[in-house]
Image (cartoon, rainbow, N blue to C red; front, side, top):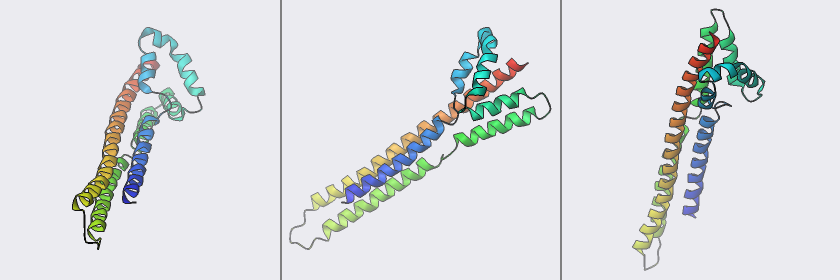
Length: 183
């Protein structure tokens, strides 16, 4: 029963961490690095009005639309509106940023707690023969489930952080390119 409970807790922690990864991947509707690749060079400059018009019509591209609207401004509010969109993107990328770390801690702590309960239950047996090796093996198995859950959470955290960092860098380059196209 305790290994099943440890597995359920570990799976819940991995699922919450995976949600963080989904938030990092789907922070914007369009991948900024792919859009930047399309807009590079003279061919990108020629295709830019058509591409930007398609982005404006895309219902899922709310952030991109707002960025394009901010870049289209010619008044003094342009820089502030662009910075507002970049701040919004940073918020979108950082949603649930601490969740994988917290989940790793929960999975590990619950694994060790349930392992100690498994060991206590085995040693509290009132029969004449207590199999200490089996009791320790059961406790280690329960702890290993918690540690495995924590390992997945940590791996997800590193991947989500790398994706968010790359997305921000690509977006900065994209904004620079869109500003150069606007001039």
